[in-house]
Image (tube, rainbow, N blue to C red):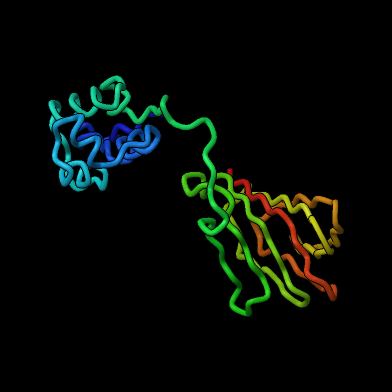
Length: 192
């Protein structure tokens, strides 16, 4: 997948690729600056997309990182780690206004609006009520502990631990915990 801009008048933004390649190789800004002969402040500005480097600077950076010039310009990350992990404290979450529902956002931000997945916890009496999504959207709710009740399409269905409910969400829908114990689930939302 290319990160080249759709508008040919807009130069490619190499900042994120530069930062990813530098970090994958365990290089500090100081070390890359020394290797490439580019100032540390210029590197920082490039990584934050506050400066667009000249071809000569991109060439020096590619040589210092031992990657092809096209890799730095296109965003291809062949030197990226095979497994990327996200620390628990870095996983964003949302609480319902009443504080009875908590969603941990497990999916990457670049898939939002296409394919999303969450860890859902609902305290007794809590409800996650949602407005309609775009036509053709579906949710898949896999209950891990406790039991939950799904309302969608004018019907309600109880879902127990170990079960999965799949349903259209192009209308108002809700997930409720009517039991007396905490319920947890994985929630996947697929958009058309």
